[in-house]
Length: 107
Image 1 (spheres, rainbow, N blue to C red):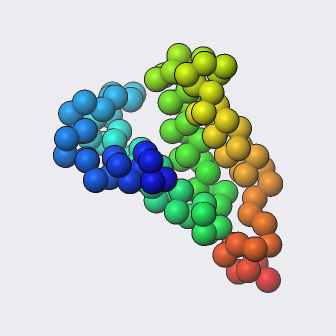
Image 2: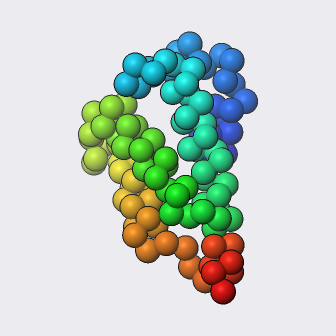
């Protein structure tokens, strides 16, 4: 959240022209969606709020980072995105624990 999402949020004006145009939706919209996933969905994940819904955009961003930006080098440059992708997948399947906002609301 702090290393990537916050940095992109602060430097949006200087980054939106240089960012990857994923699926032809434009560089500004692509960067805005990545900021939403990396910053805001990460906050939801840390709080344990909307955990399963918050992992979906994060999985998409990590999948794009792994397969598009790092050429699917799982044991090379793309090792960290692959690890995050696997972690988000497990969180999607398992869900939040009892000590989360989602767990407390469900009581």
